[in-house]
Image (cartoon, rainbow, N blue to C red):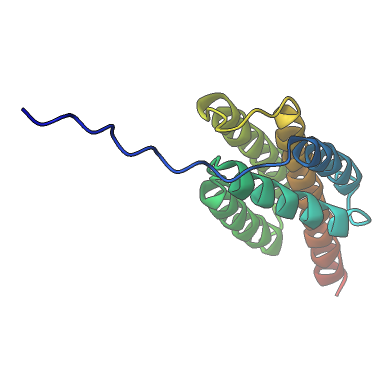
Length: 154
């Protein structure tokens, strides 16, 4: 009878500095909060979204942003088309609907994703990303409204 060899151990996961992870989560929230200010917070909004992707990569949590990005592109195209056809109310309603869709998708991702690593500030990353996306949507809506006003005045 052969002796049973122990099964090979799984490779140890990459060590994540938890203090650094918590600080970056708080920084993502702060950048998202500053990014929620339309037009002035564009740079910090992009920083918050970049931090969200980096934290997701470090912790092994999938950052599913393709659906959110796709819905934003489609909504912005519809907003531009509605502004070109003098339907400003429809464009504004699309802006609010896009904010609601983005919030729903982030909430659904937060609830369905089981964290691979312990992070008590995980919710701050999602809040930061939601605020940053809201700021980007509001900024785009303001820019589109400005373009519409300039086209309409000519």
